[in-house]
Length: 133
Image (cartoon, helix red, strand yellow):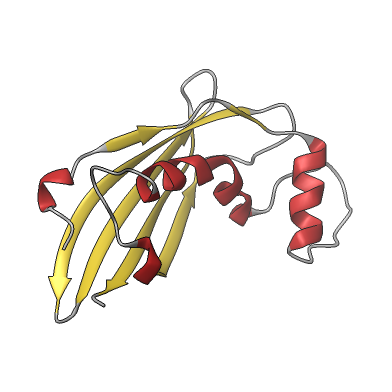
């Protein structure tokens, strides 16, 4: 069981520079073939600029999540504006809940992404389910 004292722990990413290439590569990887008008990142691109916050949590030796038994249960996003090439985005992730239900541990992780001017870009929440071995 992950110690609930870690609730509130946060992780911040370095600024992520959004490029046309990274958006197009992501679109190709997810089968998004649209090519119309101004290039705007698809909504799920939020995982690209926010991924390092997840990685910091998953590899935090003190928190010690059992990632070998982790299933990504839910994911939701809220967007404040479109993401375009040239944006520099910093994401902060925060561990907001650790609960036990039966033989499972439910871990909630929230993300807040902001641009260089500290304007909100997106927010997200993920629920990780960890089954006890």
